[in-house]
Length: 219
Image (cartoon, rainbow, N blue to C red):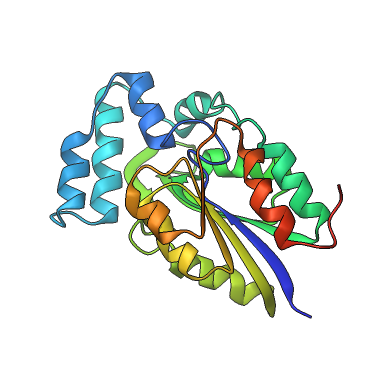
């Protein structure tokens, strides 16, 4: 028998807010719509997109990773996140985060929720924590399936995959799953690409679809 794996997007799923990068922009009163449009049109790549974010923060006087961590540490969990993770752990699932968001937040969640594997993008720093202006790319936004495949390779034989996401970039994870759930999907394509769709402010509402999928879980 192989392992059972539950894969979560982070921003908008395990935590409130559509993007941890955007949360920093709001806190600093910056806006990288220009960089987003350039990335979306293919004029810049993931590395350049992250660098354009960090450059705007630096222009606001942000110099250290600690300053960014202070902002994201206040991002609240999604209501019901602890319930869902605990339920799946009780079912024997390995819990995974794959996110294009900030690893500062993903690492916090991994500790708080006892996540087994977590991969997210980061901020390059010097040894003393000064930002270099470059990001650390671990999760290409247009290919979230790649880091997931790496994690699955580390896990070994996998019997079942459940995935939960909210944006088009999560569809590659959906395609690899036995059950995929779009949670408050931002675009119709996300619902179309998922097996089930849930609109709610409480993540535990997805259990409506997970419980019938399992037969050896706690009540």
